[in-house]
Image 1 (cartoon, rainbow, N blue to C red):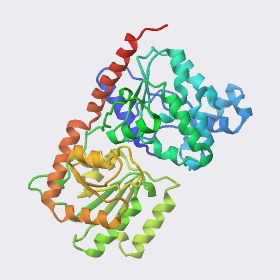
Image 2 (image 1 turned 90 degrees about the vertical axis):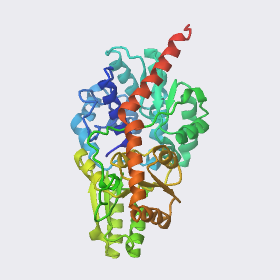
Image 3 (image 1 turned 135 degrees about the vertical axis):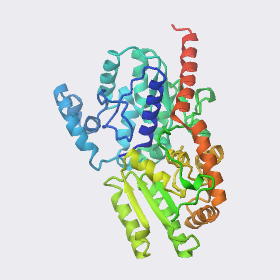
Image 4 (image 1 turned 120 degrees about the vertical axis):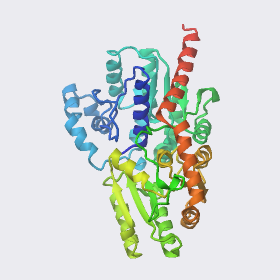
Length: 430
């Protein structure tokens, strides 16, 4: 699967290394699927997904000899697992999630000790940064053994945790809040998500620092929609680029597209749908195809699943307007920044992080959430007013170049890390 958090982490590490810093990026669970050079190359996978699952289900496997763990965690098996439909829905993994949160008290304690043993063979780092709060269970042992501060990026974990079964949800949140006291710095990507997690976990304000996600903007060509004196794309193209699932609001966008086609004020409108599409997403995509076929608009729609980086760049530069009307509390939404990097104006729902992103970038409009008609109205406004679309697209592209690059993310992250390490050195130790 394609993971926006993995893209973000990979871009950050590449930017930090480009600035001359020594960064070790350790992959967890499964091989990473990226559209840029993999910054984990040469580093083994820890907490491999097969062993983590078997340790949860089998007391025998938790005590099994290392040769068996090495066998089940082999690269060939992990690659096979990564290409299959796995149980990653919150409703299916409540017990596993809680166990991971409990760290050294959970069923995956062996995995933590293996990671620590490896880290002790490496040069001692100044700081460890966890890519998401779901990994918080390892912090206690990391700090005990390495004696260094630990930061943690916040990237929309609340949606997953809230979807856990009743039997595990509240206890998992309480465990997370307790373990969160051991983190030296939390890094949310927006004020919206920082405030939300401060409230839910009882985090002190001085341990939360907002740093916007950034992307590698190399290769993002400017769409004609935002170029001065350039004709608008003909035919006009509405775009979506995210995981092809209901949670991202793809069905809402399809219904808005159908409304626009039936109004026929925007002539020859096309829809391009791109992004991750795994085995579990395919049935949902098939229902959308049938809906479009029934309305005789399927020939005006293109689906581009699991594209390369070059294909993604071409995809964005061909658009007239962009929308991912996600239904849940999105903490950021890298796809918004990717569209704006190509000068494509966006229309996003008026909830979660989207109003903040649209305000910061000046690159789009917001509309009533979960309403195909409201979305269609805002999309139509831009499609019928090329001057407004051009101005928004140009402003969005300029904003991305100034504040949403991987380089800027790296600069702000370094400053945050330096503050933490300086504070740690100034504190007296017993």
